[in-house]
Length: 165
Image (tube, rainbow, N blue to C red; front, top):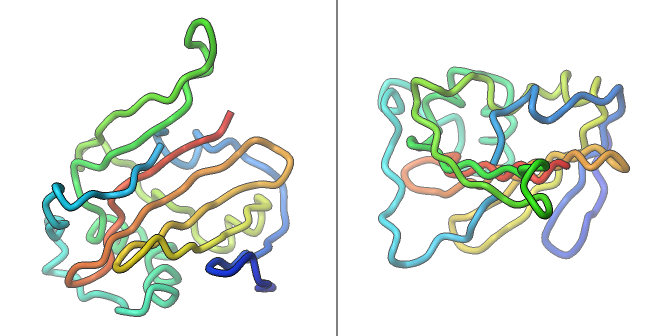
């Protein structure tokens, strides 16, 4: 897996392989930037039973994306999800929904080997203090999903934005 600079604050990890629909990976939805009016992220149920894999985000994400039990433990519910409704009239529109823990299908993020097989690129972006976003995309396909994380006692997935068309 090769890493190259992807801008002043991001990285692109290039992986190669056959494409897959984003809908097969997650149950769709856009993201937002948190505001001071929002309460801080609370640990997920079960997070106390699972140790934080790392405080440094790159190491955290490497472990988080490989293990479904870490994804379940370090995802805040209800999870805000956005997606594009291609059937909306007169044109496609973004739709928001919340996902309860009982409705989540793990893994939310496929492991590195699956991403490589499917041709997904991974870009990590610093969104400000205690905020990161991870964009998974397949070039030239319209498949793009952004996962937004916030840092409390440990990093936590707080929102999914499926921008795929």
